[in-house]
Length: 211
Image (cartoon, rainbow, N blue to C red; front, side):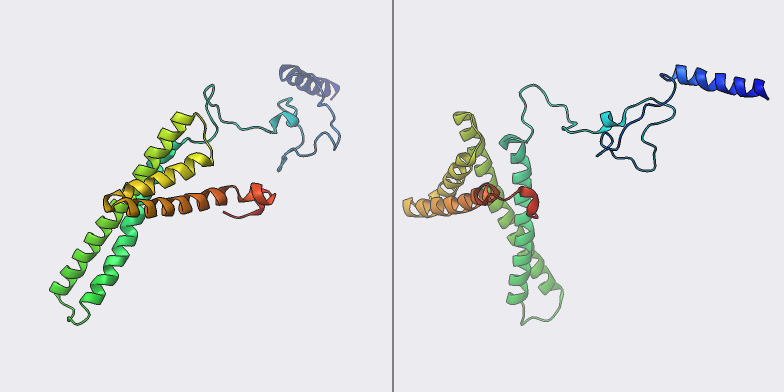
């Protein structure tokens, strides 16, 4: 009996020495506060690991030296252009469906009516996708160029890119049309910049507002 107890104690002692020591150290409730322990004891009986080192207070992403934690305008340009094209195609298709149904309301449901509605949907979808995609392309190009020229990324780039986009997009209609397009671009980009800085202007925390 004693030999078994001694053998068991020696076996446990050997395992304790193998995995980093004998008895587990004691930690107070204050030291263990904030440690996520779900269905586990504060300290593993097999690995002598202090659970306080498991709490990560910083980002776990490894970034290249000098890289920003957020994506730049060049990276966002692909998402902006693609999203604008898809949005334009969807809105254009819905508008084409509305126009097709309106123009063929006096016709009976037949193949010619279906073909006419389908043509209207595809025509309007392509037109809207082309328009919004062109606007997004101009905005992204101006934004990247202004960022590279100024060497800074702030809301001035957003407002300037939006204004130049509106002017160039409507420049084919003359100076007045370009001026109106610039005002529209200035208003839209200014509203977007104001929305992004609303928490800073009002002094509220970003987590208190749902996006």
